[in-house]
Image (cartoon, rainbow, N blue to C red; front, side, top):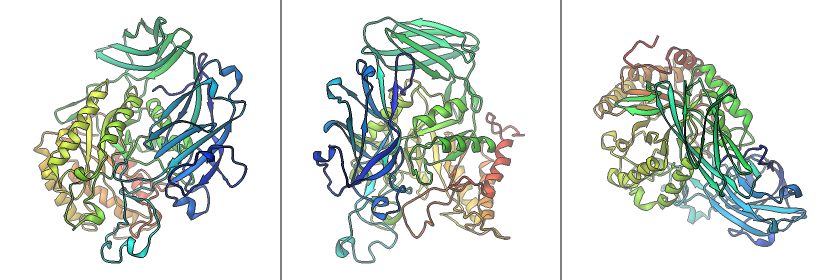
Length: 604
């Protein structure tokens, strides 16, 4: 699926702005509500989550369907072209109506979908209505439960006994923001059009051989031209599978991006695809980019900001990357769902390395409130496998051409150690599916959970890189950093025996900005620094350890709970992007660590 662009053969109309909005109590949408609304509605902005735009609990904590509506006009000059209505993402389930006619449905809150519109369906003024369902359950990704959680659950009268209202019970530690999160765009193409482009390449010394495969709906000749950043022609080819050799290739490298324009022309249509050329592979315990050992320095993040929630915010994206570069960071993981295409395009341009993750979070029924109970086999209870397959295919289809993407993550903190055989049966096919879907054959990972018996982990070893979320000194041995270091050392000694490259995709400590202490204590800024210093004292010893991604880039919003004070405070920056002491600590550390280096060599 190509990102919508405006050029000489294509037009885009974006429907960002103020939409009419309603919360509805019905679980099924009454089609009479898709007619133009004259009253009984509110006004909300799109794209953005709806939860924090008003000052009302009924909207912030709404459960089930809401409706969006606006009038759209399509200029008559465009109606002779092919028309496509595209949604960047709608969380989590969408039904789209145009003039009362159902265009289609989509499940999954973090990837784009689109519908072709026939001229016969259009009027002078058109009513676009979108029904959005925010419910999460045992079949969705992320996973949601059907009962209240918490460590005291089971000690007091049940929700059924006291008559609780229906609501979401997310099985994940971030706020369940919902709504039309990313842009709604109407774009045109000629009747015969370029549907998709797939670029692969082989690099041999200073040369690169590009293979450009074009999915063209039509019977015209296809011409492919590769332009360098100075707009000079680097090579030409033709046909649905064009091979083009580039002499003196400029490679895309972390923090040193170089993008070619692959221009595909056929009939009346044309599309220019920015492409970075680089190689990625795992070699023993090294992660190689352009055949050089790469060290991940960066973050787990969230798409999260005040008022917009998880909605697209281009200013926040630009600011976040600027802060990363200020620190010397080179990477992040899209925890715990695919990020916007706008962010991916920005990372390609800015040279930020990305671990691209599907929304496979909450696939764990023996965590948190379930601890201490008789464990249940998560993978036999949940009904997520079909959807998990789909989002892997859809994510790779969307992001296959981005140079910034160097690894796919098929899941985060699943119940892989409690039921290792079931985990392998569940995740083995998903890992293989990711490998099969990716034309560039990038490495694949699965992120492991803290608190499990790591020696029973088998599913993690099916992946190319072992990614671990570890909180020695916080959830385990909190406030006892001497014991935390000993426990971490024991675990690292085990992973060394596996022959796999290992990195941390989460490690951190909740910290309230402005809380300081002469003796580092938990929640103080000094403790956050001491926590990282203790972890690095151990991790820096091991050559198979290939990267550190802090949890989290910035504080972010979560569901309410006594263990969260206005959200998760593990950020090195506040939610407003103000640096804590630890942000300065990492600025000093990361600028001393080259992006490329063999661990056994001196970093300086």
